[in-house]
Length: 336
Image (tube, rainbow, N blue to C red; front, side):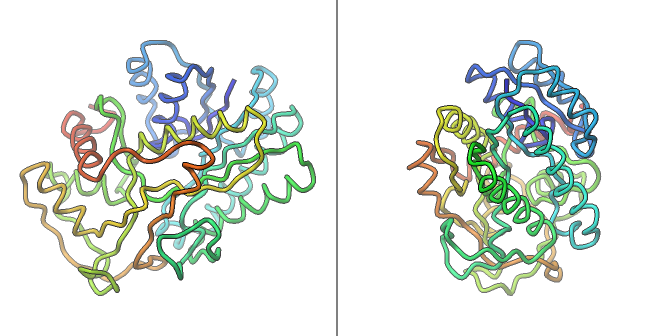
């Protein structure tokens, strides 16, 4: 049995599908702070079987312990976290409370019930403003916003735990920029409130739910002045987690891996690709840079292929196609 925290979120729901497809038994938990209960019925329809789920906040030690008593959990894929860079600058206490304290709760109980295989959802934000691109896992770690710092603190806690108890095995997965949606159009990205990530904003602009896209700076040191990121299809990302839990359950040692395509695309590249896919012109305006943003961030993902036999398959056009299909079929997200 695999415990998947943050299971109804954008990334978690896609991982859930891939785990079930690979034959794993999964118990999902979430508190719906940034997801919809309707994800559960969509997942049931997509995988054509019932799913196991508990509504739990990872900060609630009592409910977490009841969960471990009820299920024979052998591995944890830990995603549950607040994740918006901008919001973390505005409300850092919420981020430290949820992302760090919540993980400590989870690890205490996981340790008590002898569950010592952990796949940790980290982030490329731990690199901060990198001095080398593409970024290798050995690059300096210097996050420049509270969200990134919570992810790095999480890594450090886990590394200290490994030293204290070498039976703990951890795969640290540093995500770059997941976009896209499941090709079925049944699940996708549907944040509560105003989206923070660029892809759901773009598709909402295309269907007229938002008036325009705001581009945060056009004076970055890049080819067109807009920020460059390593966009990765969420299904590719999800498949990497299956490979990761496979790796751990075979008794392999801990490892830190980047999850990206190894290619950098600018905001303007993303806009042009969406315009090609949708046949629509996307209005945008240039605004000031956001605190905590950087110019360029893309991965060297080679170690993921070495250790997991995984590499990203889908290109930017496929990411945009699937994101557009999700939004077109679900103009009100999971309320559709």
